Image: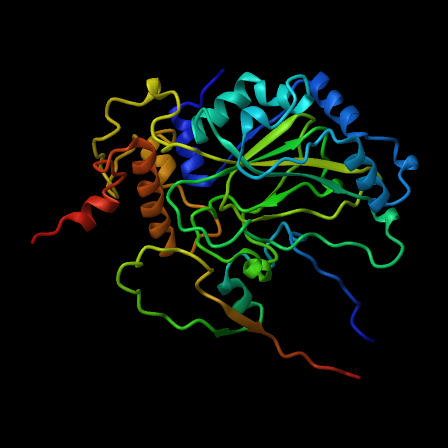
Length: 65
Length: 305
């Protein structure tokens, strides 16, 4: 059976799918870190901007089709 | 007018917004809706036609950027009256002084799904208004909700504590949901005052009613120093308190506590940079470079030639 079609948009989830990344790992997800740690440039060490730690979670599932 | 107190100012410095539920009296809300040309939902044929109708009535004037706020609106208009509500006038003066100018204003009308023939509209992407803005001075955005906003109506979504992050407008649209995000659900006459840098976006209207939100962006014409009511600033405000090993007597309403309160979405290490930036912001507001909270800047400034 094909998975149900869902439509997502900004702000549509009030709850996080997992409390922490560790909880996702325990539920069978694999974590792939995607953000290198970058040297803090002199003079802008304290500047904040985009979210720093991006990563992927992936989970391999059996497909009976 | 009622100026902001020190805890409110510190909260604005730390979280980037202040919310005043139902602060505008109902008669002004009703006057605002009547002046803009609100009509029963059944009388609105299309979003374009209704915007045209509202534009034609002209209750939201077409004014040049940079006009003095004092000259932007007719004296008896609902907008002038809501700006004169003592709490509103006091908050504006506390944040951008007594002679702010208007950057722009806009009446956002969010229509129910029944007004769209084809694809249903979705929530607006998360964004920071205007463009990258590295100033220490700041503009404010007033968001006025003239009627009750229910959860189904998709009130403005915003991320507390995001205002000091330097990002480029819609580049943050990829962040669809952030832990700690808030959606405005409020009674009629609610005012949200936001620092220009707050990440935000409008929601999709899933109700059967039109949703109105009137936004005004105001710019200061003076240094934003000690403009609020400082009479409650504690005597020990410039003194340091114990950190890390603190015993059992910590109060959460202490200004140092307000400036060092984390948001649930902060990365653990970056939260410390946020505290540092808040402390620098508070130094600007206080015009006192000796201020510090919990030693974050004193430690870094302890250097020798």
